[in-house]
Image (cartoon, rainbow, N blue to C red; front, side):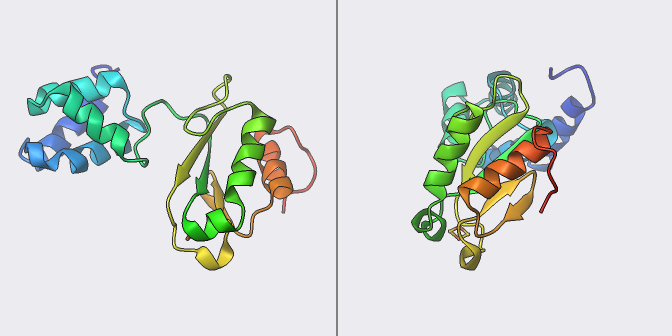
Amino acid sequence: MLKDDNRREMLEKVLKDHNYQKSALLEILHGAQEIYGFLDKELLTEISGLLNLPPSQVYGVATFYSFFNLRKPGEHIITACLGTACYVKGIEQIMTAIEEEFHLKRGGSTKDGKLSLFQTRCIGACAMAPNISIDDVIIGKATKEETIKHIKQILGEDKTETI
Ligand code: FES
């Protein structure tokens, strides 16, 4: 994966921009995720080699922060806000409904690779809680029914009119 295209060059530029500083690991991981879309084991191992850091340290940082994707995301990305306001307003039930309806777990993807479900912290739109985004479009005051309907529409399973 790392040598087949110009993304490897882009990754090296990110490292160069940070002078290969071990202390810039977090910024470098951000840069790598922007380039590749996710940080899998192969990429983390590569970064640990380039920074001369133990793989366990690089992996530890990548797994600590929820904003890093450790697996290739699906074609469509659902991100639920699990901040306090959204939690109180029922985002947990919406996430559970999505997991049951589409047979996936949070942090993972459907078997066909069409849908991924992630969670994040407060996105700064608490007045509209609960918030969930579908391919970067935020749905405020989300309900289970509407969210599942939206997802079915983007998957092409529901041909009724979009909202
Ligand atoms: S807690 Fe969800 S937007 Fe603030």
